[in-house]
Image (cartoon, rainbow, N blue to C red; front, side, top):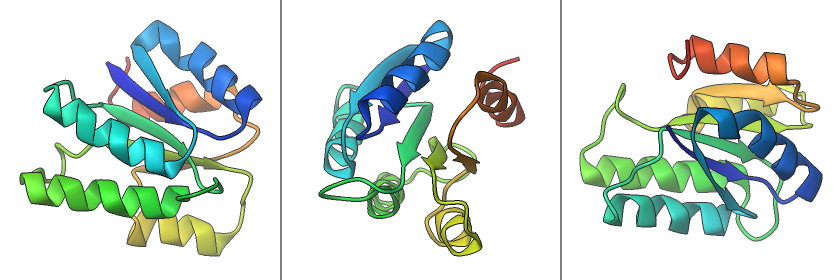
Length: 132
């Protein structure tokens, strides 16, 4: 499995990498701008991501905007659900407005509130059919 972790906080980034690295190759982006570029590059190299774990609040381009851009790229490439990359939004924002925006308007596959436990993350990966 190819995984992109998009997180501006070093500790959160390393924790996600520790949890996810046994399940696949993890690339790192520190903001939404890098995430968009990494996503484009993955398609150029014909090595698309299976999973993106992305924080919402980040500098430069936030997670919501990066997600919208990634979904536009997929649309332009003719990629449709269920072949779209699975995107789990990770954030300290536990409010209905951000959940609705990420899931319904942004096209996120899932949403996990920090602090993220390994058990919660792995349960979500199972629900998405990414691990058994």
